[in-house]
Length: 196
Image (cartoon, rainbow, N blue to C red):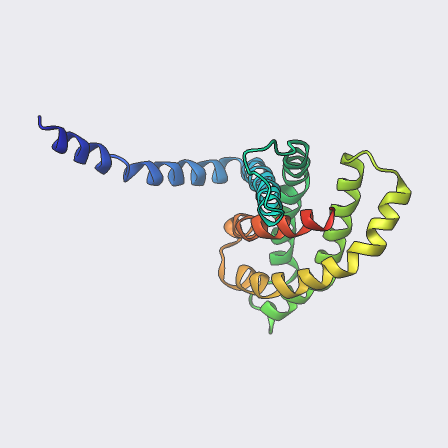
C-alpha cells in the first residue's frame, strides 16, 4: 500500500474518535450523572486556572515555559469536583421541579432564581472554599469578600446572565453543567485574576 493511501486512511480513522469519546461521555453521563459532571467540572475548572496563569504570564511578558503554580489548578479541580459539578447538577434538577416549563414566564423565573439566589450564594461559597484551600484565616476571607465579592458578583451578572438565559431555556438539563463549565473556563480565569 502506498504511504499516501495509508496516511489518508489513518486520518480518516480520526473521525470516529470524537464520536466514540462523545458516545462514552453520554454513556457515563447517563450511568453516573453526578460523578461525570463532577469530574468534568474538576478538569475544566483546573484548566480555567491554568489558562489564567498563562494569560497572566503573557500579560507580564514572562516566559510561559517557566514553572506554573500547580496548587492553583489543584484547588480549582477540588472546587469543581466537589462543589461545581454536584451543586450544579442538583440545582438544575431542582429548578426544573420548582419552576416547571409549563409555568408562565418559567424561563424568566428560573433566570431570576439563578441570578438572585444561586449566583451570590455560589460565589460566596467559592470565596470560602478557596480561602480554606489556600490555608487562609477568617480575616483573609473577610478581606477578600469585602474587596472582591461585589466586583465579582457584578461581573458575574454581566457575563453569566445571558449565558444562563441560554443555558436554562435552550440547553437540555443533562448538559447544563457541561455548558456552564465550558463558559466557566474563562470565568475561572477571571476569578483567579482577582485573587492576585
